[in-house]
Amino acid sequence: MNTNYKNSYKSTEKELVSLAVYNVGYQKCDPQYQWGPGVRDHYLIHHIIAGKGRLRVRQTTFELQAGDSFLIYPDTEVSYTADEHEPWEYAWVGFNGSDAPIILKATDFTPSRPIITNTPYGKDLTHQLLHIYEVRGNDFESAVEMTGRLYTALAVFLKGAGHALVQNNYHTYVQKAIEYIAAHYSYPITVEDIADYVGLSRSHLFRSFETVLQTSPKEYLSQFRIKQACYLLRHSNLSVTAIANSVGFESSLYFSKAFKKIKHMPPREYKQIHSEQKLQMKM
Image (cartoon, rainbow, N blue to C red; front, side, top):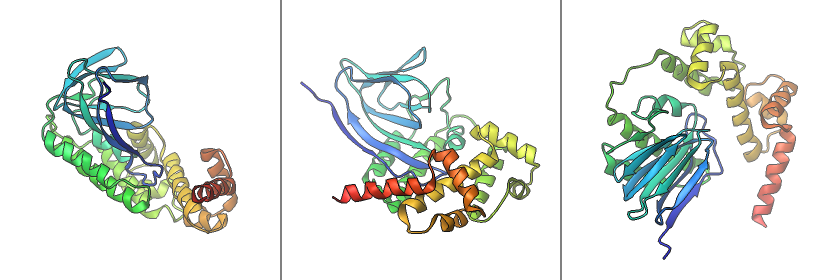
């Protein structure tokens, strides 16, 4: 008898750069139901509500049960399997964004031990994960509400962290820089402007970004601007030149080159593809 029950949602809009929900759901698994081996391109937290199962990360296997939680890191090969006699049921949320690694480093999850057994505040966590699912949707308002509830869910792991939360200077600098970029990206700001705001030399700011986000401040700023441009290309009737100006590029030619480098197509082609997709959905 097939008892596997799955209720899930995948977001097609990932507009929020700092933190965005990719998918969320609940599943009551069949005996020995397995996902993987495989990798994800985002973070994925599962909280086990009932039953048992196994998580395998590279060559290490973790035996888990109700009350435990596990975190899948991006680009890490994993598989997980429901128990034969007491298959687990769990709630999950997938997410990514510049805030994700900063927040997760303040929890008890680590790449070598991506599990938390007998999760403190487990009932509260289950409630928060299901709460995210309740407000699912692909419009911007839903994305904002899902993200707000995701922050609340992640805060549960911070409250339950067994180690002292030590404020890492690199994380502090990067967070301050990200806040500045989010508020000023539409102006022609430079890496020097960001460094001056944070109070660092350009080289120190570079080391901070490389340590925390594995990217440079210049690359992050460009990615942020292009992501905002993508939203405008999909949801506005502005010209490419107007969009370039709106996201901080003083030259539409330079904007087009930067856009093509990141999205592998010119902005006009990107806009046309998404316009055609909208028309097809309406038909």
